[in-house]
Image (cartoon, rainbow, N blue to C red; front, side):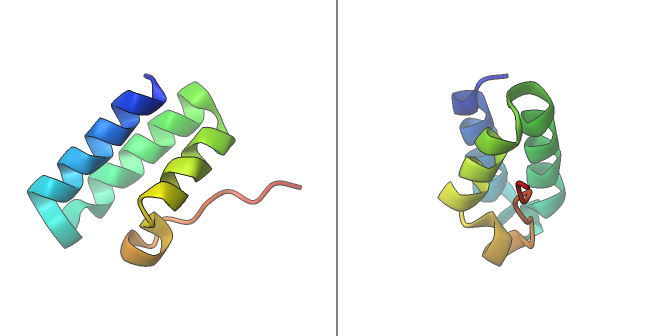
Length: 62
């Protein structure tokens, strides 16, 4: 998976399911963390404002 693929999947879920998209988006974020790391996942969370809209929180770095 690339960051662009993740973006497309997140946008597609939002377009198709609106406020009900959280489970699909959460899955994409988990796959992104696994494939591309926490930093990329956190960037997507911020870019799409997923924490506020879907309660999907970024990972805190120590």
